[in-house]
Amino acid sequence: MKVLVPVKRVIDYNVKVRVKADGSGVDLANVKMSMNPFDEIAVEEAIRLKEAGKVEEVAVVSIGVKQAQETLRTALAMGADRAILVNAADDVHTDIEPLAVAKILKAVIAEENPGLVIAGKQAIDNDMNATGQMLSALLGWSQAAFASKLEIEGDHALVTREVDGGLQTIKVKLPTIVTADLRLNEPRYASLPNIMKAKKKPLEEKTAADYGVDVTPRLTVVKTTEPAARATGIKVASVDELVAKLKEAGAV
Amino acid sequence: MAVLLIAEVTDGALALDATAKAVTAAKQLGDVIVLCTGASAKAAADEAAKIGGVSKVLVAEDALYGHRLAEPVAALIVSLASGYSHIVAPSTTDAKNIMPRVAALLDVMILSDVVGVIDADTFERPIYAGNAIQTVKSTDSVKVMTIRTSTFDLAPMGGSAPVEAIATGDNPGLSEWVEDKVAASDRPELTSAGVVVSGGRGVGSETDFALIEKLADKLGAAVGASRAAVDSGFAPNDWQVGQTGKVVAPDLYIAIGISGAIQHLAGMKDSKIIVAINKDEEAPIFQVADFGLVADLFVAVPALIDAL
Ligand SMILES: Cc1cc2nc3c(=O)[nH]c(=O)nc-3n(C[C@H](O)[C@H](O)[C@H](O)COP(=O)(O)OP(=O)(O)OC[C@H]3O[C@@H](n4cnc5c(N)ncnc54)[C@H](O)[C@@H]3O)c2cc1C
Ligand SMILES: Cc1cc2nc3c(=O)[nH]c(=O)nc-3n(C[C@H](O)[C@H](O)[C@H](O)COP(=O)(O)OP(=O)(O)OC[C@H]3O[C@@H](n4cnc5c(N)ncnc54)[C@H](O)[C@@H]3O)c2cc1C
Image (cartoon, rainbow over all chains, first blue to last red; front, side, top):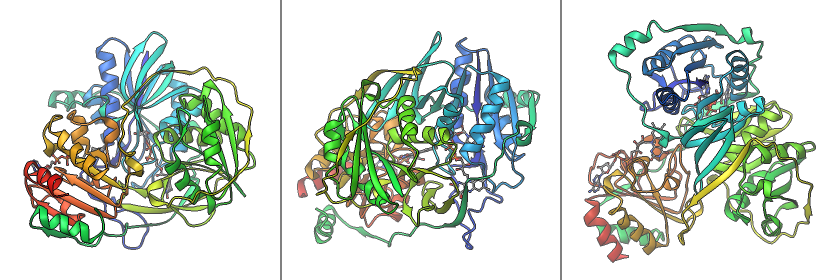
């Protein structure tokens, strides 16, 4: 069985974003970009399945700008076997909607025939939390979102999901789409020799047009603004002062 | 225009807070028809019918919907979709699982975590962990969205909408429920609690986390945690507050031994009053705190419990 992992290049999670003064969006020029943290977890899980002999091949795919190559190389350095880059935008500020991403992924899946797709639960830039579920719908496959544990058993997967009340375990028919939550695993760092080796691994380039998918967005951004700032607070010197302030504010 | 609102029903019980807040958002878009679904959902539907502003409640009761598996519930919603301009649900993990599937089946985009309704096509939603608010206009024929309830007020009770049973759909047969691990608790639910007391890595151990719980119980509060506290095993996953956990906006939020990473702030910075207790005076949490106390939590928290 083959596993396909979609990985997204996003602003590094340590960077505090800056909203452009003219309201046109967020400034992504010259900021550090990395693999979406949830996608690192997804790649790690796929590699562990391969190491455990449950799958034969791990392919990674990214849809976006040319620079997403770097993200794919990171996944290859972690241990993925092959990468596919679907060029769908020229400007780093152009983001592709989950629906369009899901349609492209569906076309990639028609060529690759994976038995399992592991995506991230959400991309930390747009926070949509949607792509995996949309892809699953388009394929008519089962879905197991927000996974904190994944076991492959014959033609099924047993998946524990992080839900509002705690944990839910479900059994889904393969092929399936799993989306990775934070506690699925702790992703490894790529070692230097593996980073070197990754440079020689195959990375195929395609375009959205190759798949005949229209990426025209359904949503237009009217404006992007900074959230209202909180009024500055004060430091209190003691627990007693804290309690007095809370009482004054009617909070306790 | 009519809005189909998917009520949050868990094991037959209506999550009234989440549903009634979503009604407030939906009401701005048109007549609100609520769908209650589950293995048993009639009682939830009767309760939803009392939310002010609801025009009608549909009930789909079937064992198939008992564990809110995405495939059958999404299929049911899609079968009901025609005639609605908007299909909405409170942003719970169930809705986040199901609604993107509904959107894709209808060939429309999903609008996740809507925090503001500008008009029938235009909405506000947070991006980048809430560090930016985007106003987006949708050109889709039907808008499918999840509503971040922490930003909407509760719709008042006092309605008496008619309740109508509807036909259920087929089982797509793609997934099966195996088990739930849900800790029963007498504490208020995290996302609707008036007071939340959260602990972070600074608390140090699962045993010491009892101190956080003790303060919470003194205040009748819900307990929250940072990701680091959950990852370290001090607290269960469903207590995580933040960008990728729960979003809360209580009247009072007390952050103890939490540094204030942007991912954590994303989940609590709309709280009315924020208190931070941290021994590091440089901790970023103090930048959002109304009242900051630089102190060792093992000294300050027991003293606070005594003083309250
Ligand atoms: C011109 C244009 C304008 C847009 N304007 C807006 C706007 O105003 N407001 C708005 O909300 N959205 C807008 N979008 C779309 C928006 O950017 C999408 O919400 C976003 O691209 C996808 O959401 P997400 O990244 O949060 O995905 P999620 O659904 O959160 O991602 C989940 C997972 O899906 C996979 N994945 C997602 N994207 C990719 C990818 N590109 N390649 C590989 N894997 C991927 C990863 O595994 C990821 O972890 C616009 C898009 C375009 C093209
Ligand atoms: C993709 C992604 C998603 C994430 N999502 C979330 C999320 O949803 N929620 C979330 O919380 N985090 C999230 N994080 C993690 C986040 O970046 C931080 O790592 C995390 O919030 C840190 O938790 P903390 O503040 O408890 O720990 P630390 O940052 O380690 O802070 C501990 C604090 O405790 C203080 N302290 C220690 N001992 C004492 C003492 N005795 N008395 C008083 N104070 C003490 C220290 O001064 C310090 O400030 C996410 C990260 C990523 C990459």
